[in-house]
Amino acid sequence: MIPQKFRKLFPGGIRPGIIIPFAHKGEWAVHELLPVFFSQAGKFNLDIATFNVSEDSLRPIFFMNDGGQLLSTRFIFDNNIRRHKIDLLLFASGMATALHVSANHMKVMLCYNSRLFMAVVGSANMNRNIRHEAGFITTEENSFNHFQDYFNQVFENDSIPISIDEL
Image (cartoon, rainbow, N blue to C red):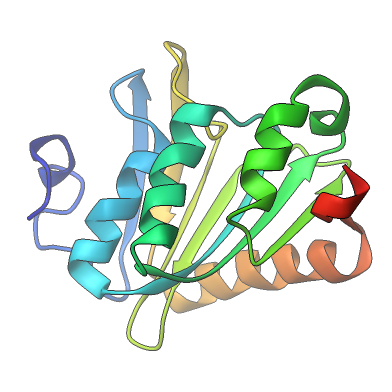
C-alpha cells in the first residue's frame, strides 16, 4: 500500500516509463520512498550516491537489508564522511554490499530489479531536513540508464572502496 503522502506522486502506482517532477519543503525524505518501491516491485538492488547522510536514512535501509528486501546495496559517499561521520560510515559498511567514497556531491538513488527500475535525482541528501527540495523520480529507461551508467563509472573508476578493516 502506498503511504498517503506518496499517493499524489504515484496515482497509478509505480510503473515503467514515468517521469515525476517534485518540489516541496520538508514534506518527505528520499529514503521514505524505499518501502513504497518495495511494495510495488518486490526485492530490489539499491545504489545511493549522496553528499550527506544521516542515521535516520540508514536505519530503514538496515532493516530492509536485514529483512531480505534488498538484493544488494552500494553506496558512494563524499570523502568528508571519513572525517566527520565515522560512526555512520561504520554503520553503513555493515549493511553495504560495497561502500565507496569520492569527491561526491550528487544525490542519486537507484532502485532496480528484473521487473522495474526507478531513479530519484534531486537536491536532497539522504537525510531529513526542513529545506526546499526539488528533483524528479523516473522509471523511464533512458533516464534511468543515464544515471546508472554514471553511478557505475564513478563507482568503478573514480572512488575508493572502504572496508571495515580500514576504519
